[in-house]
Image 1 (cartoon, rainbow, N blue to C red):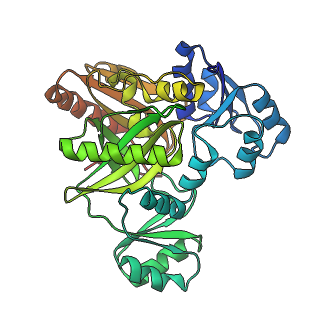
Image 2: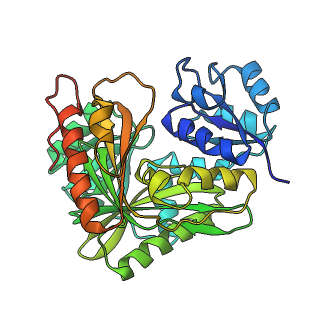
Length: 379
């Protein structure tokens, strides 16, 4: 039987959009998030308690039929406690393999998805071996917890690598070869409990200072490359036994694909699906977790999404742009914080480009990516 009460670990904007997508399906969401002002509280019941609070976790589990999550950094002990009481989807395996960058890269390689050379750095003596494996031009990343460019350093020499590791307080790291990519793309796809997979069109992404600025659907890539990208996402879903939505982020370099990372949940690069696809990534995730048939992932129109980071424009300015919609998260603006996004749709690629240029202009004027920053200038 399909579920009608689903618990969501995390109460950020992704949880908010999951909860809103659940309402028309007759699904009631309960959110668990320590923050009393969690954005998702507007979309369902909110339990505000520490991740270590076993009494609150037990209350949460007792109030729902199934559990999912909207971010990866759920403490392992909390997840194990909940998994003993209720089914957790996408599943503990998906979270374990993608929350550690070394395990994630090893998993991708074993699933037949191409990755760049990489090496673990846990003690200083491993720096030399990492250089021999990867080369001097690479990216040093913490193995866990990093997102939106946090916990990452680009290096060009052995000395820079050593200094980068020092700057990360000698945390366990992964050192990856730098990929001179032509563009960044991602595939958002959903797998049901019955193994059915529904993939969205490949999207093209632009990041600034490690934070996603814009996604365009469909990506301007060949049909052959798009099929290959979708094939990689399907392999990841099947190898994980994943139930729910995930995103596979990839680089396009010299006409080939190199996997960057997996997000085992709904993803920022899939926000365009709210207005641009026949079924949004959020609705399909809730369908999968609830045990319902998946919806059509085809495009309703050409679509794009632009993040608003650290600042908000006047609503009137956004909504005056044809095809534009504004999604506010209920978060106070501060530098580097995603506070909203603008979706834009159009019947043709040319019209989308025209409307998107206006939307990007609005975002450039208000975005603040770092403390004391001027409005962001996106290349």
